[in-house]
Length: 346
Ligand SMILES: NC(=O)c1ccc[n+]([C@@H]2O[C@H](COP(=O)([O-])OP(=O)(O)OC[C@H]3O[C@@H](n4cnc5c(N)ncnc54)[C@H](OP(=O)(O)O)[C@@H]3O)[C@@H](O)[C@H]2O)c1
View 1 (tube, protein in one colour):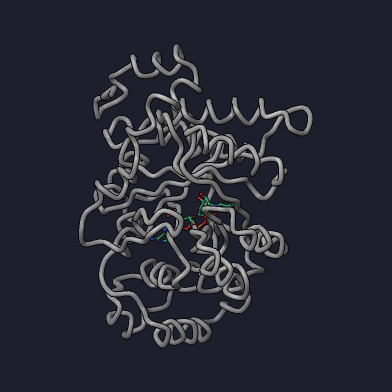
View 2 (cartoon, helix red, strand yellow):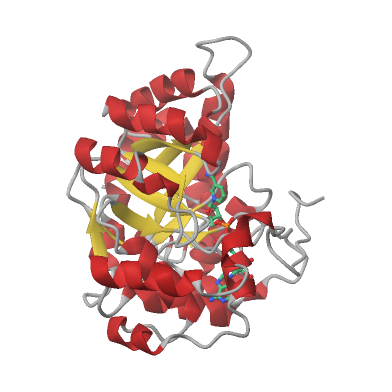
């Protein structure tokens, strides 16, 4: 078996190997390098969740990269390396990205390789491209190849159909890729509530490995159909926007953490919101995003200590309902007070 050094940027031969062999050969000869590494390399005292279809365990707190990791090489971006370092050292392994997130894949690939952690990560990625006509998978394939090169990976752990675009065609392509060993799992994603119906129908078919959905202590609609269906059909669930794009923090900025939060090991609001999300039995991992290394330390802290039971979850919601503005959160603009400078914003 080919072995690769941990510190991959110093190993240009790997990229040359990928280019020289082409995607299909790479997929056939290298897949075992990344099998289950995420769970094997994680610390033992963290909250892990099993992927229902395989039993493979992954840490229940991941890292999102939309806007936050979209920074061009040459612009100040050392904080991203520190975020990734603290994430990894805290036990995080699941990273969610997309070719549609500007430079995010490039940032993840660069810093993961410079930290020497590439093969330990569990990468969840996306596509919605197909080709010029139905059944033409050329664009999807070249997008997958580009993602692998940007991420310095020979295999993507989870490939998701972004926002259900072109989903019947894309899912067929994913099934082929999984058979061929290019990806390990596949799923579909959305974050907008009007699409929860079609998202649920895809979960109910039972053929998906993963679904990614918006769920938070504020937006609990997924509890009605998607999460029960995921439990029933053995579909793993990734949670996007667990902080409501920072709006939850805006609402609690002058609010003390309730005393009872200590009972579930929460030291800050971030852990309060994240522990609430991952304590639902259907949830496999939440994928919060940040531009701030100290926030990353808070977020990854939610991987440790007790989780709320149902009575505590209800108490947490009731507490949030006493906080002014919680009932109007959906009307607030996303990412209050924040600016992003990457390709997506431009
Ligand atoms: N498939 C889909 O349809 C879809 C849609 C949306 C998102 N996603 C995925 O889900 C990920 C998460 O969603 P999101 O990024 O939109 O929103 P989010 O994770 O709910 O919120 C991110 C915001 O929360 C703030 N934040 C994070 N940790 C904090 C802390 N400890 N204290 C205070 N503020 C904190 C961040 O600000 P700071 O930078 O100041 O920390 C950032 O602005 C995305 O990055 C993406 O990977 C997928």
